[in-house]
Length: 297
Length: 315
Image (cartoon, rainbow over all chains, first blue to last red; front, side, top):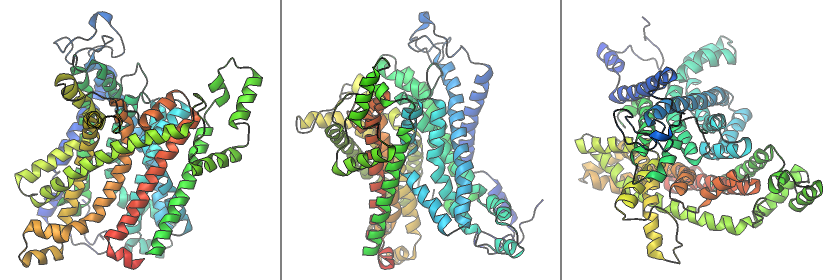
């Protein structure tokens, strides 16, 4: 087991080893973390199961079964093409998670190194990176995705890339702010005195110390990506038919409001559960990594 | 103060210049010739050449950009490649609709979020405070278009209290204008209210731990009175930041809400123009939206200086 004796905190002041009670308290996950992880776990399990099994083929249309109310045969009913809504919601979770993973992945891979670089090289280069970041901030993810849709054609890949690029500024800012704190610590001064290269310092000292903040940002941006993808599909600029997508299911349900309201409930709930899960997970992780924030929530 | 103002203004203009250049370049890499998109694949080479000369797409990219920027500065957005319609009056009309929708929604969000956030902070150890926090947490997770669809289902389709969508200009029929805006404003404003409530609560909780508030309470003021007289201004800086961020988010979020409620705003025009591959219209609308986002950021930056005397002195 590793000891925390004299491990410096973010301000460089050595911290005494935590007491057993404090350690237990820290080890116990908060309620937000538990609920958030459970909801995301549920979505992930549904997505994995839908890879090998769904009650019906979510893309096959059955004219005889169109617009059937929820029943034992079709738990969430069927849509105007006779497709099983439960199967489509299950399959839709794959697209949701895929878009989230790729969008957040792009933002992490590009934004974090840029943020660390801006934090470690606070001169012209740092300023240049952050000014570029400010310009990118003027293009919210959804707007960028609509523009990309116009240029390259709407689709899941376009949405993922655009949402990823739109999330880069958030990660660059978080990484830069964390890096600025880490760069003031004694162990970084020691590493510099020992003539360690900047790359090694970034990899060995900066990255591990800001990883908590990055993980929190990943969770928050995952939720944002899920919402944005649903919004794009709602506009007809996201995932294209026949691939099931929660946003498009919701949009299609609009013309049947009043007669077949159940069509809106299942995809709507699915979106809310996924976003709530990621938001709670983000809050829970933030509490864990940043105890100062705990009492504010 | 003047130096800070000039610096912010300089940054605003520089960001705007680079952002418009980016928009121009992004939309010019669009595959396919706009002349072919406008006239169809069966158009003769002569007709295509004439179209290119008429719209200036046969000139160099740099010249096209300068002409477009010159037009923007004069308020001339050009002529649609697809409908041959003058874009300026169209965009001005649509911007007004979007700004009314976003402005009223933000007003509703603030009217709900500020008192609720303060209440949630003051009563953070009471069950009512915890319930308020829980509701705002769930509210943040619900997409505004889902709220819109549910509102239409309940209040327009089942109860018939409000129209399900459409737009009437306030000058034509003020009552119908208000009736048609109720549901979209609630749909767009309620989710923002949930988000802002959380930030107000967090900012007020932070302020409640400050020494000056303890001193005010020691002088005999109640928790609420101390907060109103001394805390609100201090909580203002983080709240103004989030209001600015959310205002920009609402502007973009209104694209989807306008679709749900069939409102002829800038967002609807953008989605239609993307569908029609109307390059110049998309370019102009995106430029207007980005300008508004940058303008909001600039105004937030100015608001800091007004709200925080330390920044005024530093400047």
